[in-house]
Image (tube, rainbow, N blue to C red; front, top):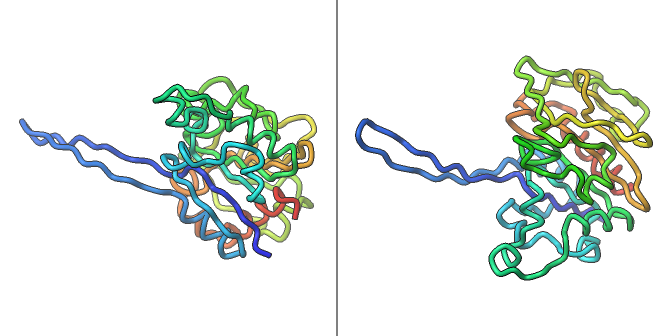
Length: 249
């Protein structure tokens, strides 16, 4: 039977100002960065439901029971505010469930959870992702900084497997392409450090209640994951094994 995964985030809108001497005009462009991750999972038999950030703000499941239709939930480059401030709450002051607490309770009840790095996950640029100290952090194998946690590495950080026997990295090539950055975190005491990039945590895995979670602190696509990483022979297998381990498979 196909496993089902929900990916929330990985979208953005760019609003540009073009100044040409005295005159100016604006253009707006919508973009998604999910295609590499989605293709990797679908190639390995996963059924993928994707909610861009603006869709997730309203449609991301509100309760642990609603999340149970998924074997794994992935958050990638989507800030805590998007899940906390449902439009009905922000605009109409309607009281609704705290969806970060729902993710925590989903994991404790047996769900699989993966947080993927970016400018708006973990703590993010200028600290704006704001997951530190939330219910989501309770079910992650890492703790977060209470500040901007980005490590920009234009020189490249080469991943190194720390726990070669872990199912997440089983059968992967020994050599991985370099990454261009990640979110700085600290491994929790009872979690497993699966891989590093430079001196930093890249992949950590842990068990919480009846469920499992994985932190992948770099990106699943550009810019931190350059084309050499996204086109790497091990890319699809890595994400399949991350999702499978989180699902308890």
